[in-house]
Image 1: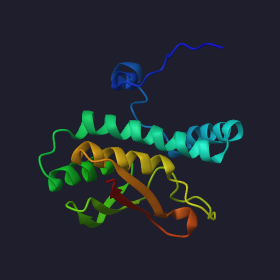
Image 2: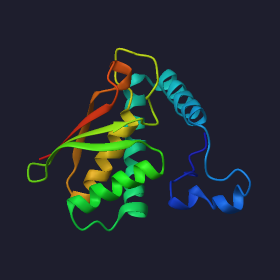
Image 3: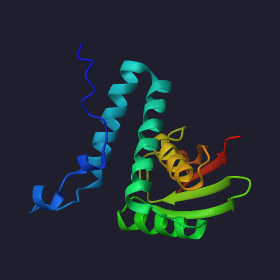
Length: 173
């Protein structure tokens, strides 16, 4: 078994899209993203179980959120600037439509919705939420801005019959 660590993430792995895709550009269809995401999830879940697949997807989202903040949002000097930049970027990059339903920075509590998200909008109904990657992504964004660790949980999902994904975020003690 190869124990070398070959693929540590860095922003450089996104590459030079103008050089590498001069004709096709940076965009692709949502089906291609979901094909990759759900095939990864299927393979990981079969090999390691649902709980471990959820943990891996949360951690991957967390890693992505840290890098997203560092490379695209930072610096943000106050909550309104941070949330405004985040909202604009998620829309501009076609990740989703971010809304903040509740904010209590002192208590470290947020209720956040993301509509038309990449992961589940338009999928058939299931009896469970599926946006585990997004939970980690949001947790890292909030931690990067506040310096406090957050536990993020999806409480409403397109796949459970809602038409937006809703997340609660609570700072850990």
